[in-house]
Image (tube, one colour):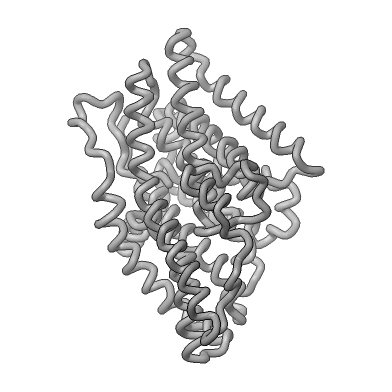
Length: 375
């Protein structure tokens, strides 16, 4: 069974674009952006975690040696770190630049206390989703905390999958994945007084692990049920896809209430990814027919990692220098996103793909790897 999961890749691009709007909202004053749906679109990060676990577990059903662990982690590191480092250094340059121009142009947070040597170190070493150095808020490239959480999940997945192989427990590996979800959930609940999951700079690594290993469970459930479920009529899948999209919209829109029990979003994205992985409904067909959406999926990691910097620079130029009112974001967001899209196409080609690990021929791999990027 080999799948490219094109629709899931497209969703990742769409949701990365919505996270852009989420981070743009504080600079804007327009109902197009300042609404409850955009205000809660940060929850789409959990979709990325579940999708990442889905794809990685699909590609790596077994890791059988320490050398394979090293190769796996090398490939994942080269996939995510070069762009992360590029953007981190770009923010360092911007931080110095802010101090130079603050006397001439109004700059947001000219002396941001969260951008300090300690948070730089945690960002540099991908520890910025952990409580190391007791951070007080997100810092530097704000979205990068989730890349830290991804790396933690990669390490846990590789070591756990190796241990499962060594003890010959491959048939019950889902129980081990479920155990990680349970333990991470208990830990996350224990550091709060409720059931929120939208942690970032401190316990985001637990949030990432919960989503990632739910994704691993999801792909194994997909494999187990594929032969039977894939024979169901496409009209049923169309109905399920419509319902799924509607539920996503409603639950994101009601985020102010549902974030109090944020674990429901993990279940939402588990079901959503499972349904759209079959790609049999009309919505899937429509999405796959639009080339622009495929490009959004292709550039999604760059869009996600680059948008915070592009928002800041755009805001300085158009709002602070050119004196556009904040209400102008009702249309300026299109130009802002176009700039991000073009810049992301460049970083995808010259950074993501330039440093990506050149894998061996397919015959030498454990399983065919789908062309679906993980964050």
